[in-house]
Length: 375
Length: 140
Image (cartoon, rainbow over all chains, first blue to last red; front, top):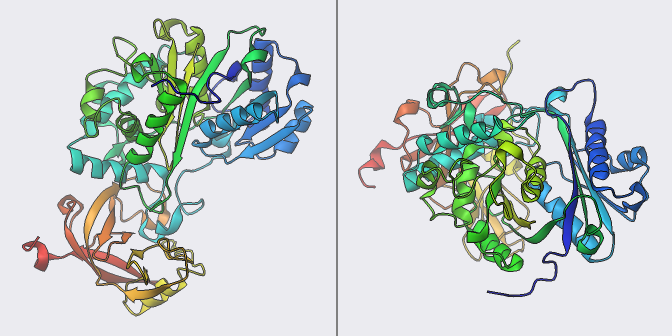
């Protein structure tokens, strides 16, 4: 299976910064992004003057951010403020470095949506043509897909409950996680429906915070303070056919395509993956991701989850070791990318995946993305 | 003051769809070459990538592909309907549509259930809803 891919292990994440998570009406996304960037820069020891690329996400103006940080850039871009663009932003950073357009790229994410009262559903927002029928919110789209999955494969909420409970258990080991009380099975089943079949605990959190990553070439990464985390491989596949509707294929074909590429590009087998960071906007996305990447057969995701494969305690592929979007913090993929690096560096204390070598990130949407990181 | 339910966002391409609804006609675009029928309306055939398409009137029959029950209040105007259903319906001609199933309790909706269009009149709007199709149930 050895084959060449020009970007394999060529770029590294060398600095990571995260803010506290919570509700911070006294500040805004610029400050949160910049506070995270300060941490990322100081932990890796890169000079501010070396940052020549900037990728901004969810912060309205790259120009204002670059001005505030007094960056001297050759490359600068804002990506759409949707969670699917966390991974895509990181790809762009790799491409910019590989092409020589930048040497050190800072990726900066800031989210003040909780304080700003951002709503995910309702009459305002890009919720498509179905408002007259009261169909709105990303959660409802995932609920519609999962209901069909239940019909087609015999899955049920019994398969989702362990995801919510496991990630909450992980959050309890993560200082600063927004949620700090366990979810019992009883809590899960007693939680109210938001969009049936999905309940409150099937939904991610909404909170403020910021994340920053510093990416540079493997050569430049060598003499920095932190051990580099290699970006061994990534792959992406998009599909917009019928995207005005909840997808009828659970993104399975494009995730299969991503799986077919990402391991080969990285020259890493699935079996060598130590842990997973799965974009968990809603619990069914975790199930769809596992099936799509081939961690289990399609339709067997529920059983795979109920067997405890995602748990830090005894699971084959401990997943979302911070608690993820469901229980740690709603950082739209950025928090998971930060955790992937920290796991590879073995900095995670109580929640450390033992002997962690390789962490895989996946975001299952109409633009599906996966990364393989190694220490 | 009563808050009305959200109105569709009329654009260049769905205008004809909503105009036809006023006459209780459910319509969609059909590719002249491949016969593919699609919604929501758009400027070109997604199959042949040209402008060779025309509007057709649909039979109004379909089956429930999937459905959800909305419990959260996202719209004041839907508050008295909660919990209300929303269904993804696969129409006989192949296109999907999102709508509500009327004339049946939420607990009696099933995936695969045959449905047909029925019409609801609101302020300035005639909107397609779907009802269980009892006549064709035995045949499926």
